[in-house]
Image (spheres, rainbow over the protein chains, first blue to last red):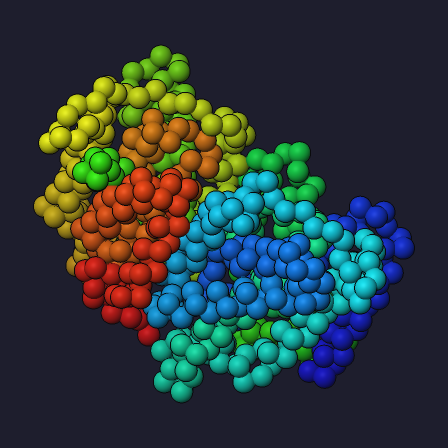
Length: 335
Length: 288
Protein backbone atom coordinates (compact mmCIF):
# COMPACT_ATOMS: atom_id res chain seq x y z
CA UNK A 1 0.00 0.00 0.00
CA UNK A 2 2.73 2.40 1.02
CA UNK A 3 4.76 1.37 -2.01
CA UNK A 4 1.86 2.07 -4.25
CA UNK A 5 1.45 5.50 -2.71
CA UNK A 6 5.11 6.23 -3.32
CA UNK A 7 4.83 5.04 -6.90
CA UNK A 8 1.89 7.31 -7.43
CA UNK A 9 3.66 10.32 -6.02
CA UNK A 10 6.55 9.69 -8.39
CA UNK A 11 4.07 9.56 -11.27
CA UNK A 12 2.66 12.96 -10.39
CA UNK A 13 6.08 14.54 -9.73
CA UNK A 14 7.44 13.30 -13.04
CA UNK A 15 4.34 14.52 -14.87
CA UNK A 16 4.61 17.96 -13.27
CA UNK A 17 8.31 18.22 -14.12
CA UNK A 18 7.53 17.27 -17.73
CA UNK A 19 4.72 19.82 -17.94
CA UNK A 20 6.95 22.57 -16.53
CA UNK A 21 9.66 21.95 -19.10
CA UNK A 22 7.36 21.39 -22.07
CA UNK A 23 6.90 25.01 -23.26
CA UNK A 24 10.65 25.16 -23.93
CA UNK A 25 10.51 22.04 -26.07
CA UNK A 26 7.33 22.23 -28.10
CA UNK A 27 5.96 24.82 -30.47
CA UNK A 28 3.98 27.66 -29.01
CA UNK A 29 0.78 26.44 -30.60
CA UNK A 30 0.96 23.22 -28.63
CA UNK A 31 1.48 25.22 -25.47
CA UNK A 32 -1.83 26.89 -26.28
CA UNK A 33 -3.46 23.48 -26.78
CA UNK A 34 -2.02 22.18 -23.51
CA UNK A 35 -3.44 25.19 -21.69
CA UNK A 36 -6.84 24.24 -23.09
CA UNK A 37 -6.35 20.70 -21.77
CA UNK A 38 -5.50 22.12 -18.35
CA UNK A 39 -8.68 24.18 -18.24
CA UNK A 40 -10.70 21.11 -19.22
CA UNK A 41 -8.99 19.18 -16.41
CA UNK A 42 -10.47 21.62 -13.89
CA UNK A 43 -14.03 21.23 -15.16
CA UNK A 44 -13.76 17.46 -15.69
CA UNK A 45 -12.50 17.06 -12.11
CA UNK A 46 -15.76 18.65 -10.99
CA UNK A 47 -17.91 16.55 -13.29
CA UNK A 48 -16.09 13.42 -12.19
CA UNK A 49 -16.58 14.21 -8.52
CA UNK A 50 -20.31 14.59 -9.17
CA UNK A 51 -20.79 11.67 -11.56
CA UNK A 52 -17.97 9.31 -10.71
CA UNK A 53 -17.87 9.73 -6.95
CA UNK A 54 -21.40 10.78 -6.02
CA UNK A 55 -23.29 8.98 -8.80
CA UNK A 56 -25.24 12.04 -9.90
CA UNK A 57 -25.16 13.27 -13.46
CA UNK A 58 -24.91 16.59 -15.20
CA UNK A 59 -25.72 17.23 -18.81
CA UNK A 60 -25.68 21.00 -18.59
CA UNK A 61 -22.19 21.73 -17.30
CA UNK A 62 -21.55 24.06 -20.23
CA UNK A 63 -24.13 26.33 -18.61
CA UNK A 64 -22.02 26.84 -15.46
CA UNK A 65 -18.91 27.05 -17.58
CA UNK A 66 -20.53 29.79 -19.65
CA UNK A 67 -21.68 31.68 -16.57
CA UNK A 68 -18.12 31.62 -15.21
CA UNK A 69 -16.67 32.77 -18.52
CA UNK A 70 -19.13 35.65 -18.87
CA UNK A 71 -18.65 36.70 -15.25
CA UNK A 72 -14.88 36.95 -15.70
CA UNK A 73 -15.19 38.66 -19.08
CA UNK A 74 -17.86 41.19 -18.09
CA UNK A 75 -16.25 42.15 -14.79
CA UNK A 76 -12.94 42.63 -16.61
CA UNK A 77 -14.58 44.67 -19.34
CA UNK A 78 -16.75 46.93 -17.22
CA UNK A 79 -14.91 47.15 -13.89
CA UNK A 80 -11.34 46.23 -14.83
CA UNK A 81 -11.31 43.27 -12.44
CA UNK A 82 -7.98 41.45 -12.85
CA UNK A 83 -7.39 37.76 -13.55
CA UNK A 84 -7.45 36.06 -10.15
CA UNK A 85 -10.46 37.83 -8.61
CA UNK A 86 -12.18 37.46 -11.98
CA UNK A 87 -11.98 33.69 -12.11
CA UNK A 88 -12.84 33.37 -8.42
CA UNK A 89 -15.94 35.47 -9.09
CA UNK A 90 -16.70 33.22 -12.06
CA UNK A 91 -16.48 30.18 -9.82
CA UNK A 92 -18.70 31.77 -7.17
CA UNK A 93 -21.38 32.75 -9.68
CA UNK A 94 -21.31 29.20 -11.09
CA UNK A 95 -21.54 27.77 -7.58
CA UNK A 96 -24.39 30.10 -6.61
CA UNK A 97 -26.52 29.20 -9.61
CA UNK A 98 -25.50 25.57 -9.22
CA UNK A 99 -26.70 25.66 -5.64
CA UNK A 100 -30.09 27.03 -6.68
CA UNK A 101 -30.56 24.45 -9.44
CA UNK A 102 -29.27 21.72 -7.15
CA UNK A 103 -31.63 22.53 -4.30
CA UNK A 104 -34.60 22.23 -6.63
CA UNK A 105 -33.45 19.37 -8.81
CA UNK A 106 -31.92 17.16 -6.15
CA UNK A 107 -35.21 16.58 -4.43
CA UNK A 108 -35.74 13.76 -6.86
CA UNK A 109 -33.93 10.70 -8.14
CA UNK A 110 -31.04 10.78 -10.57
CA UNK A 111 -32.82 10.31 -13.86
CA UNK A 112 -34.74 13.54 -13.30
CA UNK A 113 -31.55 15.39 -12.48
CA UNK A 114 -30.10 14.40 -15.84
CA UNK A 115 -33.08 15.97 -17.59
CA UNK A 116 -33.20 19.06 -15.40
CA UNK A 117 -29.53 19.78 -16.08
CA UNK A 118 -30.05 19.08 -19.78
CA UNK A 119 -32.76 21.74 -19.80
CA UNK A 120 -30.56 24.07 -17.75
CA UNK A 121 -27.78 23.95 -20.35
CA UNK A 122 -30.16 24.87 -23.14
CA UNK A 123 -31.76 27.62 -21.06
CA UNK A 124 -28.42 29.27 -20.19
CA UNK A 125 -27.33 29.22 -23.80
CA UNK A 126 -30.52 30.83 -25.00
CA UNK A 127 -30.19 33.52 -22.33
CA UNK A 128 -26.56 34.18 -23.30
CA UNK A 129 -27.69 34.37 -26.93
CA UNK A 130 -30.55 36.76 -26.38
CA UNK A 131 -30.03 39.04 -23.38
CA UNK A 132 -28.26 42.13 -24.79
CA UNK A 133 -25.79 42.32 -21.86
CA UNK A 134 -24.09 39.13 -23.09
CA UNK A 135 -23.80 40.30 -26.72
CA UNK A 136 -24.94 36.90 -28.07
CA UNK A 137 -23.33 35.75 -31.29
CA UNK A 138 -21.21 38.90 -31.55
CA UNK A 139 -19.28 37.84 -28.49
CA UNK A 140 -17.01 39.72 -26.12
CA UNK A 141 -13.31 40.35 -26.55
CA UNK A 142 -11.15 40.85 -23.50
CA UNK A 143 -7.54 41.92 -23.16
CA UNK A 144 -4.67 39.76 -21.98
CA UNK A 145 -4.74 38.67 -18.35
CA UNK A 146 -2.75 40.65 -15.79
CA UNK A 147 -1.55 39.34 -12.49
CA UNK A 148 -0.35 41.89 -9.89
CA UNK A 149 -0.10 44.42 -12.69
CA UNK A 150 2.05 42.22 -14.92
CA UNK A 151 0.63 41.15 -18.24
CA UNK A 152 0.84 37.41 -18.86
CA UNK A 153 1.96 36.15 -22.24
CA UNK A 154 1.08 32.75 -23.61
CA UNK A 155 3.73 30.82 -21.69
CA UNK A 156 3.08 32.77 -18.52
CA UNK A 157 -0.62 31.94 -18.78
CA UNK A 158 0.26 28.30 -19.36
CA UNK A 159 2.13 28.23 -16.05
CA UNK A 160 -0.71 30.04 -14.32
CA UNK A 161 -3.22 27.45 -15.54
CA UNK A 162 -0.83 24.65 -14.56
CA UNK A 163 -0.70 26.05 -11.03
CA UNK A 164 -4.50 26.28 -10.88
CA UNK A 165 -4.81 22.70 -12.14
CA UNK A 166 -2.41 21.42 -9.47
CA UNK A 167 -4.35 23.36 -6.84
CA UNK A 168 -7.64 21.82 -7.98
CA UNK A 169 -6.18 18.32 -8.11
CA UNK A 170 -4.96 18.70 -4.53
CA UNK A 171 -8.32 20.17 -3.50
CA UNK A 172 -10.20 17.28 -5.13
CA UNK A 173 -8.00 14.62 -3.57
CA UNK A 174 -8.36 16.13 -0.12
CA UNK A 175 -12.15 16.43 -0.49
CA UNK A 176 -12.39 12.82 -1.59
CA UNK A 177 -10.24 11.62 1.29
CA UNK A 178 -12.26 13.53 3.87
CA UNK A 179 -15.54 12.55 5.45
CA UNK A 180 -17.31 14.50 2.72
CA UNK A 181 -15.75 12.29 0.07
CA UNK A 182 -16.77 9.17 1.93
CA UNK A 183 -20.32 10.49 2.14
CA UNK A 184 -20.23 11.05 -1.64
CA UNK A 185 -19.14 7.46 -2.21
CA UNK A 186 -21.80 6.14 0.14
CA UNK A 187 -24.43 8.01 -1.85
CA UNK A 188 -23.09 6.56 -5.05
CA UNK A 189 -23.22 2.96 -3.93
CA UNK A 190 -26.73 3.24 -2.53
CA UNK A 191 -28.71 6.33 -1.61
CA UNK A 192 -31.04 4.38 0.62
CA UNK A 193 -28.20 2.68 2.47
CA UNK A 194 -26.33 5.97 2.84
CA UNK A 195 -29.40 7.59 4.32
CA UNK A 196 -29.85 4.69 6.70
CA UNK A 197 -26.26 5.20 7.86
CA UNK A 198 -27.02 8.80 8.67
CA UNK A 199 -25.65 10.55 5.59
CA UNK A 200 -27.67 13.69 4.96
CA UNK A 201 -28.59 13.08 1.33
CA UNK A 202 -29.83 16.53 0.42
CA UNK A 203 -26.87 18.26 2.04
CA UNK A 204 -24.20 16.14 0.38
CA UNK A 205 -25.88 15.91 -3.02
CA UNK A 206 -26.33 19.67 -3.12
CA UNK A 207 -22.74 20.07 -1.98
CA UNK A 208 -21.43 17.83 -4.76
CA UNK A 209 -23.53 19.67 -7.30
CA UNK A 210 -22.45 23.11 -6.05
CA UNK A 211 -18.78 22.08 -5.97
CA UNK A 212 -18.87 20.82 -9.54
CA UNK A 213 -20.57 24.05 -10.62
CA UNK A 214 -17.79 25.98 -8.84
CA UNK A 215 -15.13 24.02 -10.74
CA UNK A 216 -17.01 24.71 -13.98
CA UNK A 217 -17.26 28.42 -13.22
CA UNK A 218 -13.52 28.71 -12.51
CA UNK A 219 -12.74 26.80 -15.70
CA UNK A 220 -15.04 29.15 -17.61
CA UNK A 221 -13.16 32.17 -16.25
CA UNK A 222 -9.84 30.60 -17.20
CA UNK A 223 -11.13 29.88 -20.69
CA UNK A 224 -12.35 33.46 -21.20
CA UNK A 225 -8.83 34.75 -20.57
CA UNK A 226 -7.32 31.94 -22.59
CA UNK A 227 -9.20 32.56 -25.82
CA UNK A 228 -9.64 36.29 -25.03
CA UNK A 229 -12.94 36.06 -26.86
CA UNK A 230 -16.18 34.35 -25.90
CA UNK A 231 -19.45 34.00 -27.72
CA UNK A 232 -22.67 32.33 -26.66
CA UNK A 233 -22.49 29.72 -29.40
CA UNK A 234 -19.59 27.98 -27.65
CA UNK A 235 -21.61 26.96 -24.63
CA UNK A 236 -23.89 24.43 -26.26
CA UNK A 237 -25.23 20.99 -25.51
CA UNK A 238 -22.25 19.36 -27.25
CA UNK A 239 -19.80 20.95 -24.88
CA UNK A 240 -21.81 19.72 -21.89
CA UNK A 241 -21.72 16.18 -23.22
CA UNK A 242 -17.98 16.51 -23.94
CA UNK A 243 -17.27 17.06 -20.25
CA UNK A 244 -19.32 14.01 -19.34
CA UNK A 245 -17.63 11.93 -22.03
CA UNK A 246 -14.22 13.01 -20.70
CA UNK A 247 -15.09 11.83 -17.18
CA UNK A 248 -16.42 8.49 -18.42
CA UNK A 249 -13.75 7.67 -20.98
CA UNK A 250 -11.03 8.91 -18.64
CA UNK A 251 -12.30 6.84 -15.75
CA UNK A 252 -15.22 7.50 -13.42
CA UNK A 253 -14.22 8.28 -9.87
CA UNK A 254 -10.53 8.63 -10.62
CA UNK A 255 -8.53 11.85 -10.50
CA UNK A 256 -6.03 10.43 -12.95
CA UNK A 257 -8.99 9.58 -15.15
CA UNK A 258 -10.12 13.20 -15.18
CA UNK A 259 -6.69 14.30 -16.39
CA UNK A 260 -6.58 11.63 -19.09
CA UNK A 261 -10.17 12.28 -20.11
CA UNK A 262 -9.61 16.03 -20.46
CA UNK A 263 -6.64 15.35 -22.72
CA UNK A 264 -8.72 12.92 -24.76
CA UNK A 265 -11.66 15.24 -25.29
CA UNK A 266 -9.47 18.19 -26.32
CA UNK A 267 -6.99 16.35 -28.52
CA UNK A 268 -9.27 13.97 -30.46
CA UNK A 269 -11.60 16.67 -31.81
CA UNK A 270 -8.55 18.87 -32.45
CA UNK A 271 -6.72 16.30 -34.56
CA UNK A 272 -9.94 15.33 -36.35
CA UNK A 273 -11.05 18.94 -36.79
CA UNK A 274 -11.06 18.62 -40.59
CA UNK A 275 -13.26 15.55 -40.37
CA UNK A 276 -15.85 16.70 -37.87
CA UNK A 277 -18.35 13.96 -38.69
CA UNK A 278 -15.75 11.25 -38.21
CA UNK A 279 -14.73 12.85 -34.96
CA UNK A 280 -18.33 12.44 -33.72
CA UNK A 281 -18.45 8.86 -34.94
CA UNK A 282 -15.11 8.09 -33.31
CA UNK A 283 -16.07 9.71 -29.99
CA UNK A 284 -19.40 7.90 -30.03
CA UNK A 285 -17.97 4.48 -30.81
CA UNK A 286 -15.24 4.82 -28.19
CA UNK A 287 -17.81 5.93 -25.65
CA UNK A 288 -20.01 2.89 -26.39
CA UNK A 289 -17.02 0.55 -26.25
CA UNK A 290 -15.85 2.00 -22.94
CA UNK A 291 -19.30 1.79 -21.40
CA UNK A 292 -19.86 -1.79 -22.51
CA UNK A 293 -16.38 -3.27 -22.23
CA UNK A 294 -14.27 -1.12 -19.91
CA UNK A 295 -16.51 0.84 -17.55
CA UNK A 296 -13.49 1.97 -15.55
CA UNK A 297 -12.17 3.94 -18.51
CA UNK A 298 -8.59 4.74 -19.40
CA UNK A 299 -7.52 4.98 -15.75
CA UNK A 300 -8.91 1.49 -15.15
CA UNK A 301 -7.07 0.12 -18.17
CA UNK A 302 -3.82 1.70 -17.01
CA UNK A 303 -4.27 0.20 -13.58
CA UNK A 304 -4.89 -3.26 -15.03
CA UNK A 305 -1.82 -2.86 -17.22
CA UNK A 306 0.34 -1.91 -14.26
CA UNK A 307 -0.96 -4.80 -12.20
CA UNK A 308 -0.21 -7.20 -15.05
CA UNK A 309 3.29 -5.77 -15.32
CA UNK A 310 4.00 -6.03 -11.60
CA UNK A 311 2.64 -9.55 -11.49
CA UNK A 312 4.74 -10.49 -14.47
CA UNK A 313 7.91 -9.01 -13.04
CA UNK A 314 7.08 -10.42 -9.62
CA UNK A 315 8.44 -7.27 -7.98
CA UNK A 316 5.64 -6.81 -5.57
CA UNK A 317 4.59 -10.09 -4.08
CA UNK A 318 1.99 -8.51 -1.86
CA UNK A 319 0.05 -7.36 -4.88
CA UNK A 320 -1.96 -10.53 -5.31
CA UNK A 321 -5.03 -10.95 -7.45
CA UNK A 322 -7.41 -10.83 -4.55
CA UNK A 323 -5.75 -7.67 -3.31
CA UNK A 324 -6.27 -6.05 -6.68
CA UNK A 325 -9.86 -7.22 -6.87
CA UNK A 326 -10.52 -5.82 -3.43
CA UNK A 327 -8.98 -2.48 -4.32
CA UNK A 328 -11.00 -2.07 -7.47
CA UNK A 329 -14.10 -3.03 -5.51
CA UNK A 330 -13.58 -0.32 -2.92
CA UNK A 331 -12.86 2.00 -5.81
CA UNK A 332 -9.60 3.52 -4.64
CA UNK A 333 -10.14 7.01 -5.82
CA UNK A 334 -6.86 8.56 -4.86
CA UNK A 335 -4.84 7.52 -7.87
CA UNK B 1 -54.56 36.38 -30.90
CA UNK B 2 -54.40 34.30 -27.73
CA UNK B 3 -56.75 31.65 -29.07
CA UNK B 4 -54.73 31.45 -32.25
CA UNK B 5 -51.51 30.99 -30.30
CA UNK B 6 -53.15 28.23 -28.27
CA UNK B 7 -54.34 26.44 -31.40
CA UNK B 8 -50.99 26.40 -33.17
CA UNK B 9 -49.36 25.58 -29.84
CA UNK B 10 -51.52 22.49 -29.59
CA UNK B 11 -50.33 21.49 -33.07
CA UNK B 12 -46.62 21.61 -32.16
CA UNK B 13 -47.41 20.20 -28.75
CA UNK B 14 -48.99 17.14 -30.30
CA UNK B 15 -45.74 16.54 -32.16
CA UNK B 16 -43.71 16.86 -28.96
CA UNK B 17 -46.16 14.33 -27.54
CA UNK B 18 -45.02 11.74 -30.07
CA UNK B 19 -41.40 12.17 -28.95
CA UNK B 20 -42.45 12.14 -25.30
CA UNK B 21 -44.46 8.93 -25.77
CA UNK B 22 -41.43 7.18 -27.24
CA UNK B 23 -39.29 8.42 -24.34
CA UNK B 24 -41.72 7.22 -21.67
CA UNK B 25 -42.29 3.87 -23.37
CA UNK B 26 -38.58 3.09 -23.56
CA UNK B 27 -37.90 4.40 -20.06
CA UNK B 28 -40.70 2.30 -18.57
CA UNK B 29 -39.54 -0.97 -20.04
CA UNK B 30 -35.75 -0.57 -20.08
CA UNK B 31 -34.95 2.16 -17.49
CA UNK B 32 -33.11 3.93 -20.31
CA UNK B 33 -33.06 7.73 -20.60
CA UNK B 34 -32.68 7.65 -24.36
CA UNK B 35 -30.71 10.68 -25.54
CA UNK B 36 -30.81 9.27 -29.09
CA UNK B 37 -34.62 9.34 -29.24
CA UNK B 38 -34.63 12.68 -31.05
CA UNK B 39 -31.95 11.60 -33.47
CA UNK B 40 -33.92 8.50 -34.42
CA UNK B 41 -36.46 10.96 -35.79
CA UNK B 42 -33.73 13.07 -37.40
CA UNK B 43 -32.36 10.03 -39.21
CA UNK B 44 -35.85 9.07 -40.33
CA UNK B 45 -36.45 12.56 -41.67
CA UNK B 46 -33.24 12.37 -43.75
CA UNK B 47 -34.28 8.96 -45.12
CA UNK B 48 -37.71 10.36 -46.01
CA UNK B 49 -36.09 13.34 -47.72
CA UNK B 50 -33.91 11.00 -49.77
CA UNK B 51 -36.91 8.91 -50.72
CA UNK B 52 -38.86 12.00 -51.73
CA UNK B 53 -36.07 13.35 -53.89
CA UNK B 54 -35.78 10.01 -55.66
CA UNK B 55 -39.41 10.37 -56.73
CA UNK B 56 -41.24 8.37 -54.07
CA UNK B 57 -44.55 9.74 -52.77
CA UNK B 58 -45.13 10.92 -49.20
CA UNK B 59 -46.68 7.59 -48.20
CA UNK B 60 -43.73 5.59 -49.50
CA UNK B 61 -41.24 7.98 -47.88
CA UNK B 62 -43.01 7.68 -44.54
CA UNK B 63 -43.06 3.89 -44.67
CA UNK B 64 -39.41 3.78 -45.66
CA UNK B 65 -38.36 6.13 -42.87
CA UNK B 66 -40.36 4.16 -40.27
CA UNK B 67 -38.75 0.90 -41.38
CA UNK B 68 -35.29 2.47 -41.28
CA UNK B 69 -35.79 3.89 -37.78
CA UNK B 70 -37.19 0.62 -36.44
CA UNK B 71 -34.06 -1.02 -37.78
CA UNK B 72 -31.79 1.54 -36.09
CA UNK B 73 -33.61 1.29 -32.77
CA UNK B 74 -33.61 -2.51 -32.73
CA UNK B 75 -29.97 -2.65 -33.82
CA UNK B 76 -29.07 -0.20 -31.06
CA UNK B 77 -30.69 -2.55 -28.58
CA UNK B 78 -29.08 -5.70 -29.98
CA UNK B 79 -25.60 -4.25 -30.45
CA UNK B 80 -25.32 -2.00 -27.41
CA UNK B 81 -28.09 -1.86 -24.85
CA UNK B 82 -28.63 -5.61 -24.53
CA UNK B 83 -25.15 -6.08 -23.11
CA UNK B 84 -25.60 -3.61 -20.31
CA UNK B 85 -29.26 -4.30 -19.53
CA UNK B 86 -28.72 -4.63 -15.78
CA UNK B 87 -26.27 -1.76 -15.39
CA UNK B 88 -26.89 1.47 -13.52
CA UNK B 89 -29.18 3.95 -15.31
CA UNK B 90 -26.20 6.29 -15.61
CA UNK B 91 -24.36 3.73 -17.74
CA UNK B 92 -27.45 3.18 -19.88
CA UNK B 93 -27.80 6.92 -20.47
CA UNK B 94 -24.14 7.22 -21.40
CA UNK B 95 -24.45 4.45 -23.96
CA UNK B 96 -27.36 6.22 -25.64
CA UNK B 97 -25.23 9.36 -25.67
CA UNK B 98 -22.65 7.38 -27.64
CA UNK B 99 -25.33 6.33 -30.12
CA UNK B 100 -26.43 9.98 -30.36
CA UNK B 101 -22.86 10.96 -31.32
CA UNK B 102 -22.65 8.20 -33.93
CA UNK B 103 -26.03 9.03 -35.51
CA UNK B 104 -25.04 12.71 -35.58
CA UNK B 105 -21.73 11.95 -37.24
CA UNK B 106 -23.14 9.47 -39.76
CA UNK B 107 -25.95 11.78 -40.85
CA UNK B 108 -23.55 14.70 -41.17
CA UNK B 109 -21.21 12.54 -43.21
CA UNK B 110 -23.93 11.15 -45.50
CA UNK B 111 -26.05 14.25 -45.98
CA UNK B 112 -24.01 17.26 -44.81
CA UNK B 113 -24.47 19.60 -41.86
CA UNK B 114 -26.48 22.31 -43.59
CA UNK B 115 -30.22 22.66 -43.11
CA UNK B 116 -32.36 21.29 -45.93
CA UNK B 117 -35.94 22.21 -46.69
CA UNK B 118 -38.57 19.51 -46.51
CA UNK B 119 -41.70 19.69 -48.70
CA UNK B 120 -44.94 20.11 -46.81
CA UNK B 121 -47.23 17.14 -47.36
CA UNK B 122 -50.25 19.15 -46.26
CA UNK B 123 -52.00 22.12 -47.82
CA UNK B 124 -50.82 25.37 -46.28
CA UNK B 125 -53.82 27.63 -46.85
CA UNK B 126 -55.32 28.90 -43.61
CA UNK B 127 -58.87 28.24 -42.59
CA UNK B 128 -60.96 29.96 -40.00
CA UNK B 129 -61.80 28.07 -36.85
CA UNK B 130 -63.86 29.73 -34.16
CA UNK B 131 -62.52 33.12 -35.13
CA UNK B 132 -58.84 32.10 -35.26
CA UNK B 133 -56.86 31.47 -38.41
CA UNK B 134 -55.02 28.16 -38.51
CA UNK B 135 -53.31 26.45 -41.42
CA UNK B 136 -54.87 23.25 -42.67
CA UNK B 137 -51.50 21.55 -42.23
CA UNK B 138 -51.59 22.20 -38.49
CA UNK B 139 -55.02 20.63 -38.22
CA UNK B 140 -53.88 17.58 -40.19
CA UNK B 141 -50.81 17.21 -38.01
CA UNK B 142 -52.90 17.43 -34.87
CA UNK B 143 -55.39 14.84 -36.09
CA UNK B 144 -52.63 12.46 -37.19
CA UNK B 145 -50.79 12.80 -33.88
CA UNK B 146 -53.96 12.07 -31.95
CA UNK B 147 -54.80 9.07 -34.10
CA UNK B 148 -51.29 7.68 -33.55
CA UNK B 149 -51.50 8.33 -29.83
CA UNK B 150 -54.90 6.63 -29.74
CA UNK B 151 -53.56 3.64 -31.64
CA UNK B 152 -50.65 3.32 -29.21
CA UNK B 153 -52.98 3.42 -26.22
CA UNK B 154 -55.29 0.86 -27.81
CA UNK B 155 -52.31 -1.36 -28.58
CA UNK B 156 -51.02 -1.20 -25.01
CA UNK B 157 -54.45 -1.64 -23.48
CA UNK B 158 -56.14 -4.28 -25.59
CA UNK B 159 -53.60 -6.32 -27.55
CA UNK B 160 -51.78 -9.31 -26.11
CA UNK B 161 -48.36 -7.80 -26.84
CA UNK B 162 -49.34 -4.48 -25.39
CA UNK B 163 -50.51 -6.10 -22.19
CA UNK B 164 -47.23 -7.98 -21.99
CA UNK B 165 -45.37 -4.68 -22.36
CA UNK B 166 -47.31 -3.20 -19.49
CA UNK B 167 -46.63 -6.28 -17.38
CA UNK B 168 -42.92 -5.77 -17.99
CA UNK B 169 -43.20 -2.24 -16.71
CA UNK B 170 -44.81 -3.44 -13.49
CA UNK B 171 -42.31 -6.15 -12.63
CA UNK B 172 -39.84 -7.65 -15.03
CA UNK B 173 -39.06 -10.75 -13.01
CA UNK B 174 -42.66 -11.53 -12.26
CA UNK B 175 -43.56 -11.03 -15.93
CA UNK B 176 -40.95 -13.60 -16.91
CA UNK B 177 -42.51 -16.07 -14.46
CA UNK B 178 -45.85 -15.54 -16.18
CA UNK B 179 -44.30 -16.85 -19.37
CA UNK B 180 -43.86 -13.49 -21.07
CA UNK B 181 -40.94 -13.58 -23.51
CA UNK B 182 -39.01 -10.68 -21.99
CA UNK B 183 -36.37 -10.45 -24.70
CA UNK B 184 -38.90 -10.23 -27.51
CA UNK B 185 -40.96 -7.67 -25.63
CA UNK B 186 -37.94 -5.44 -25.11
CA UNK B 187 -37.12 -5.59 -28.81
CA UNK B 188 -40.74 -4.72 -29.50
CA UNK B 189 -40.43 -1.77 -27.09
CA UNK B 190 -37.48 -0.36 -29.01
CA UNK B 191 -39.32 -0.91 -32.30
CA UNK B 192 -42.43 0.93 -31.11
CA UNK B 193 -40.25 3.68 -29.66
CA UNK B 194 -38.61 3.91 -33.07
CA UNK B 195 -41.97 4.24 -34.81
CA UNK B 196 -42.89 7.14 -32.52
CA UNK B 197 -39.55 8.83 -33.23
CA UNK B 198 -39.86 8.35 -37.00
CA UNK B 199 -43.37 9.79 -37.03
CA UNK B 200 -42.41 12.83 -34.98
CA UNK B 201 -39.35 13.41 -37.18
CA UNK B 202 -41.41 13.12 -40.36
CA UNK B 203 -44.18 15.41 -39.16
CA UNK B 204 -41.78 18.01 -37.71
CA UNK B 205 -39.53 18.08 -40.77
CA UNK B 206 -41.72 20.45 -42.84
CA UNK B 207 -41.86 22.84 -39.86
CA UNK B 208 -38.28 22.88 -38.54
CA UNK B 209 -36.54 21.50 -41.66
CA UNK B 210 -33.92 18.82 -41.77
CA UNK B 211 -30.39 18.95 -40.32
CA UNK B 212 -28.34 16.75 -37.97
CA UNK B 213 -29.21 19.02 -35.03
CA UNK B 214 -32.88 19.45 -35.88
CA UNK B 215 -34.22 17.36 -32.98
CA UNK B 216 -31.96 18.63 -30.18
CA UNK B 217 -34.39 21.15 -28.73
CA UNK B 218 -37.32 18.82 -29.49
CA UNK B 219 -35.59 16.23 -27.32
CA UNK B 220 -35.40 18.67 -24.41
CA UNK B 221 -39.07 19.53 -24.81
CA UNK B 222 -40.00 15.87 -25.09
CA UNK B 223 -38.17 15.20 -21.82
CA UNK B 224 -39.73 18.24 -20.17
CA UNK B 225 -43.11 16.82 -21.17
CA UNK B 226 -42.19 13.36 -19.89
CA UNK B 227 -41.09 14.81 -16.53
CA UNK B 228 -44.34 16.73 -16.39
CA UNK B 229 -46.14 13.42 -16.32
CA UNK B 230 -43.66 11.89 -13.88
CA UNK B 231 -41.63 9.99 -16.51
CA UNK B 232 -43.76 6.88 -16.01
CA UNK B 233 -47.14 8.08 -17.18
CA UNK B 234 -48.10 8.25 -20.86
CA UNK B 235 -51.26 10.36 -20.48
CA UNK B 236 -49.20 12.68 -18.27
CA UNK B 237 -46.54 12.99 -20.97
CA UNK B 238 -49.14 13.83 -23.61
CA UNK B 239 -50.70 16.48 -21.39
CA UNK B 240 -47.24 17.84 -20.59
CA UNK B 241 -46.35 18.01 -24.28
CA UNK B 242 -49.55 19.86 -25.18
CA UNK B 243 -49.00 22.21 -22.25
CA UNK B 244 -45.42 22.96 -23.32
CA UNK B 245 -46.50 23.48 -26.92
CA UNK B 246 -49.13 26.00 -25.87
CA UNK B 247 -47.04 27.70 -23.18
CA UNK B 248 -44.01 28.20 -25.41
CA UNK B 249 -46.18 29.50 -28.20
CA UNK B 250 -47.82 32.04 -25.93
CA UNK B 251 -44.47 33.02 -24.44
CA UNK B 252 -42.99 33.17 -27.95
CA UNK B 253 -45.87 35.36 -29.12
CA UNK B 254 -45.49 37.87 -26.31
CA UNK B 255 -41.81 37.70 -25.29
CA UNK B 256 -40.07 36.65 -28.50
CA UNK B 257 -39.33 33.26 -30.01
CA UNK B 258 -35.81 33.15 -28.53
CA UNK B 259 -37.03 32.19 -25.10
CA UNK B 260 -38.93 29.06 -26.10
CA UNK B 261 -36.25 26.60 -24.90
CA UNK B 262 -35.75 28.42 -21.60
CA UNK B 263 -39.43 27.95 -20.96
CA UNK B 264 -39.11 24.17 -21.16
CA UNK B 265 -36.42 24.33 -18.46
CA UNK B 266 -38.45 26.67 -16.29
CA UNK B 267 -41.36 24.23 -16.55
CA UNK B 268 -39.18 21.29 -15.54
CA UNK B 269 -37.94 23.19 -12.50
CA UNK B 270 -41.39 24.43 -11.47
CA UNK B 271 -42.83 20.95 -11.84
CA UNK B 272 -40.00 19.40 -9.83
CA UNK B 273 -40.31 22.05 -7.15
CA UNK B 274 -44.07 21.67 -6.74
CA UNK B 275 -44.59 17.99 -7.34
CA UNK B 276 -41.39 16.01 -7.87
CA UNK B 277 -43.27 12.89 -8.90
CA UNK B 278 -45.02 14.60 -11.79
CA UNK B 279 -48.63 15.32 -12.57
CA UNK B 280 -49.85 11.77 -12.12
CA UNK B 281 -47.61 11.22 -9.14
CA UNK B 282 -46.79 7.97 -7.47
CA UNK B 283 -44.41 6.65 -10.02
CA UNK B 284 -42.63 3.50 -9.05
CA UNK B 285 -41.45 2.41 -5.67
CA UNK B 286 -37.79 3.10 -5.24
CA UNK B 287 -35.55 0.10 -5.41
CA UNK B 288 -32.99 -0.47 -2.69
